[in-house]
Length: 398
Image (cartoon, rainbow, N blue to C red; front, top):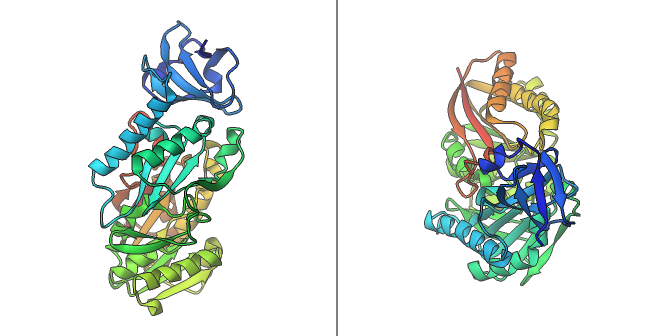
């Protein structure tokens, strides 16, 4: 018999709107003895079948929906393969993978109906993250299906995200299929080249979600002095210099990623004398630049995730306000601030309020001239607004 998860009375509204998460507080009872990642049928208190889900007994998100209503997922091999095939087909159909771009997110977890599964392609290599109990349960099946659908036989696992601990899972990295990737895989993005370290780089090696934003921000960089904060391997630096920036100063706390940034300049035959690389804490360096009365025409703030959960929002808000306030003070009259948040716990409205408060405290007047989000291969399902994790604002001061 199939294990069952039965909700408390009145706790079925979100599932009827096809939101994929079932929180522990909504669970009335569990019939059977489902284990970590096992598939359970989900029912309302009135006995209505609401779909099937992956069970996670240790997580506050007790179950993540694979399917809704009467949709059958008893044959998980066929069910998951079809879901993956559809997700990948959409990217191909929308011409997202082409001669100008060969780095792409193929599967984007809940937004593609596959909770916890993230798959990126870098040229002829695939990287995969299995971030939830359900994705982990079906890992061997998923790996074989990915190879069959894409025709790519080299798949590397990057399940080293801390969210796995919330599911009762340990962090794992390593080869899943084929050959171990080299230390540097060259990808093309908007006709620019970047070296990606699939095995050790941030996330799965590169920030694919900023692809379109790098191009948008670079349009403001011509003949400008640019400050690129939290630069990582220089994605924004390369795009700005390629678009004619007069100088780009990049700051990151890791000397290793700055070396990769320098390498990316060489890959694109860009003038190294127009780039400065500072290994420093961004908060400290921004204050030092303020004290030295330095100024810039364009400042980019692309910090790491300050608030993975809602419980960390208050501390994150202080951090976001500090760096934005300092950035506003460093801008020349008419200068541009491109500022981002990838914190899921900070929604777009709150982020805009934080930036507005920073401008007020910095004593500047500013306008939002453009709002930015993640690239289209990181879609946002209408039934899952939490999928919009990347928020960006381009602000211009008077």
